[in-house]
Amino acid sequence: MGFAFSHKIVMAKTSANFVCAACGNATTKWAGRCEACGAWNTISEEVPLSQSGPAKKTLGNSRGRAVPLTDLSSTEPPPPRVASGLSELDRVLGGGLVPSSAILVGGDPGIGKSTLLLQGAAMFARAGLKVIYASGEEASAQVRMRAQRLGLADAPVKLAAETNLRDILTTLEQERPDLAIIDSIQTMWADNVDSAPGSVSQVRAAAHELTSFAKRSGMSVILVGHVTKDGQIAGPRVVEHMVDTVLYFEGERGHQFRILRAVKNRFGPADEIGVFEMTGAGLAEVTNPSALFLSERGQPSPGSVVFAGIEGTRPVLCELQALVAPSPHSQPRRTVVGWDGGRLAMILAVLEARCGIPFAGLDVYLNVAGGMKISEPAADLAVAAALLSAREDVSLPPETVVFGEISLSGALRPVSQTENRLKEAQKLGFTSAIAPSGGKAGASSGMTLQQMGDLTAFVGDLFGAG
Image 1 (tube, rainbow, N blue to C red):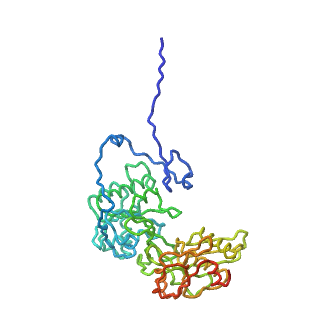
Image 2 (cartoon, helix red, strand yellow):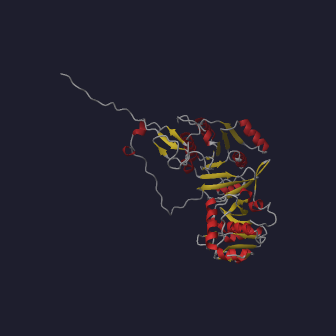
Image 3 (cartoon, rainbow, N blue to C red):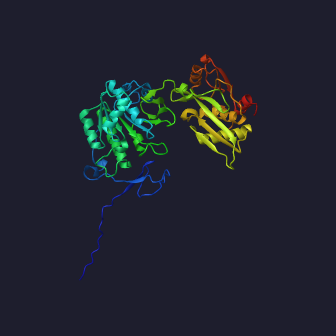
């Protein structure tokens, strides 16, 4: 009598995880194009952490410690800050460096991130902090050469050229510095993660370990991050959520100035900017950026308008330049540098629909002089003025600034901090301003303020059309 045995061999299933480096979306299979963000060739395999030992236990089977609770009325003193002496850097940080904070600095290659952080490290060290600068991209001799060129060779900064994360953490634990600068996070290698340096897994693990160590030890850490071709910090977006502050170092290679912009700050205002000028001796602070952006502005010409903007808490004046010319192509060009191209299309549509001024068959070029990038809607009216000035070949009155938001109905909407915009313009010698009606401007501004309610009145008053 025979017996038939049927059994199934159950094998442990290894769940591979593929993560997009652009958006952090996780999938179970590799693809050439991310379904979440549409980026190509950004998905790589992430090896899951081992599930052996205590990690197998469910959270419900073990008891943790009770977490102390507080109410909303509890008051805590503000975090102490250490000023570096670089006022523009301190401004962007919210007043200085906060202990136990994690800061991520991103920027294009060669824009000056290492120069900025080396100068900042030297200033913090001279202010009394113990600073360690760990470079994974350059040898210690190269960093010393840059320090000598910048006149910082005597600064008490400790250097390290290492990419092994375990060795760096051991060194930081022994030395106990007040500030550690890691240049860059993409070069760090964690030996407990089975992937290449710069991959999603390595960047996430290195950022987590460094940030956690900073919180435990009271040390501040600054991480340098590479950026993608789209200008975003490379690696998973979770890195930006781990840190307390995210700074972008911006600028054009053809221009001498650089802008340090805060896009996230748990200890200060976001969207704050610091302005630096790149010189042969390093980065020099620019205390009056409006004067720098308008320094090469000559006599008023058609298409040139001065916009009074706000960057963070700082009023900044810059020049908008427009050129309108007949197009030899069937599809006219719309080229924008330093502003949102979609917003330009909206302004052109409003001018044609509400004011009867067509731009069909005309090439339109818009540029923010000096390489400045503007994002606030308050530039709408200045852009419309520049476009009309270029189209009609008529210059705006000299010593005049323009600001205001345009709605789709053609109405002009007031913007915030009108008084600060006017004070900055008056400080630079401007005597008149054009702004929407209803703005809160005090009588002490000392400027001639011309307020208008809609775009039709603006066009008719300044250009004799509407």
